[in-house]
Each structure stands twice: as C-alpha cells, then as structure tokens.
Length: 214
Image (cartoon, rainbow, N blue to C red; front, side, top):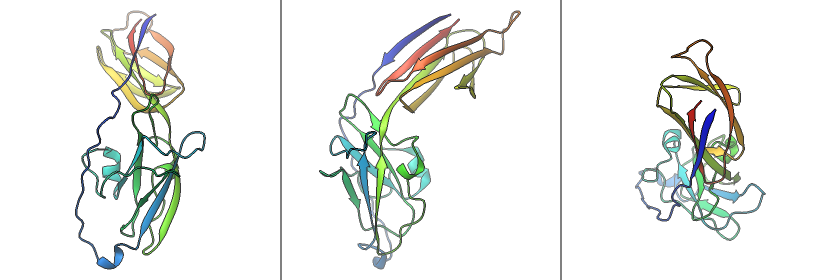
C-alpha cells in the first residue's frame, strides 16, 4: 500500500483578541461568587506561563470554542502558582477551555475528563470554589482518500466515517498516541474489497496527514 505521511505544524497563537460583555444581573449575586482554577500539566506541575483560560456560562458557547465569542469577560492568565480567578459570577454552572501558546508543544484540556472541563454542579451564591484542571499534549490527523472509491474508516476498531472518493476525514485536539486506522472499500469493488490497516502516530502540536492510495 502506498501511504504517504506529511506533517504540518499549525501556526502558533501569537495574538489574543480580548472582548468584554455587559451582564445585567441581581447586584446581590455579584462580587460574592468566584471560581479559582489551578492549571496543571500532564506531570502534575502548575502551568504558569504561555497559557490562558476562557470561561463560559453555557455548554453551547463552550462547545464552539470561539475566540471572539465568550459570555464572561476576558481570557485570564495563570499566576506564579498556576491559578486564575474568575469573580463576580452568578450562581450557576461554568465551563472552561485552557490552551497554551508560543510553545513547541501545544497543550489543552479538550477531550479530557469532565472535571478538567467544567463544574458538575452550579456555584453556590456567596462562595468561592477551587478546582484543579489538567492539560495534556495534543495533536491531530487528516486522512485524504486519494481513490475513486468510498472507504469505511475505523479508528482503533470503532467506526468513524465513510470517506467518499477524494474526500477527507480530520480530527484535532487528539491525545498523543498511535491510532490504528482501518480503511474498508465499500464502492467500486472488483472481486474482493480492499481492506487496509495502518497506524498514524500523532505528535504534539502537529497535524499528521495521510494520503491513502492503496
């Protein structure tokens, strides 16, 4: 099988856009409720630089992960202990995104465990909640189907997608490991369907591109 690999390092985040928003709320709920997040890396060490935290008050905006739309204030940067403090909050659930920038190895809290991404219960009025959120190295992959047939893609044994002729399938924010890919021909079959398995090593801060043409 002729499978070509190429590696593309995404542009490092060098400029952060800051936006603020105005909320109308009961004054009694403001300046009394806070959330403190301690950011730690995959080794359990505090992250103190080249990192920012964005806070969201609803899961929809959290899922979008947009730099120009977020409902609570501006992104914040960890202090010397890896802590960020969001104050003047309303008593409700919150979700956060953590990303690094300016590093050779890109890290975030995407696709990690739920405690690393949001509160399991609403903040209580007049309290300060302290949580620890971990970030891990991430990369991505992209598979280009450079054939005239549709192939069914399985990732680590689980169905992922049907890739049409000259179509592609991509994933970002994936944990650093080797993924097993199986491509099973479903159209344009002559005789026995082509059934090909190969591995994609995902590296930190890198999108691994595979051009599939068996």
